[in-house]
Length: 254
Image 1 (tube, rainbow, N blue to C red):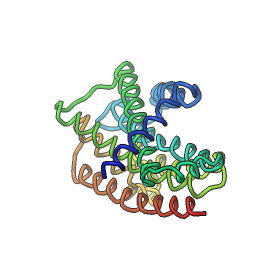
Image 2 (image 1 turned 90 degrees about the vertical axis):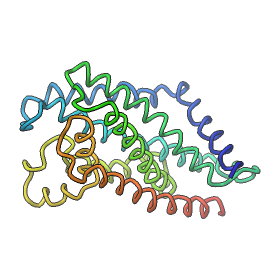
Image 3 (image 1 turned 180 degrees about the vertical axis):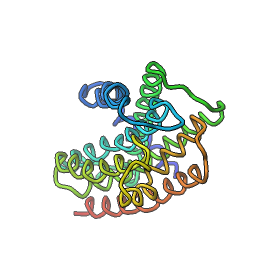
Image 4 (image 1 turned 90 degrees about the horizontal axis):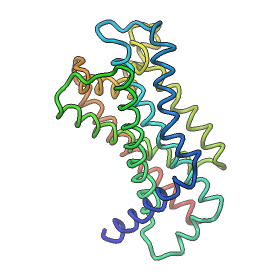
């Protein structure tokens, strides 16, 4: 366990120190989130009705959840690139814990996701968003976000190990996650959707997570959304982490 923890931290550090040398990735964590907030706030905000809330208060939790889920793209692209360049084989030849490669990748995502969340919250505050909750609830919301992002990092790790190229990882991940974020309560009220989409949106993990964030940050009705979001988070980790580890072992054993 000590070796696993040490090796995981080393791999995480390796993935993080690459960011300043990759401006395109750094833009994905800084400029892109700001662009999405401004786009939805000022282009779509006047056309979408959100009874009981201003659109900016309705929007920010949703757009942060979307952004935190897509944060795992770096893991998918990075793992696939390492496989194609033979770096995974080099790791395999070293006296290191094999799960550390995946654990380090997903741990690095927690750091980059934290950066994205801070940037989005600051941007949201500048365009009119405000918290309507206690400090404890706000902090709990941050923690829940990072857990949700960590869960999706394991999903993207599996994607990166299954596909043949970084371009394929980008396409497959986008196709899988993008519709889920929009067929949810992230950007519009579920009640405004057709009945068939409403039925799907109500059980969509993104809807449950976004509603949990609104309950924690802007005082929306909590119902069972916070517990539901926690359950979905642990289910995603329980499903995709073993699948990613099993795929990694088969790949490393070729």
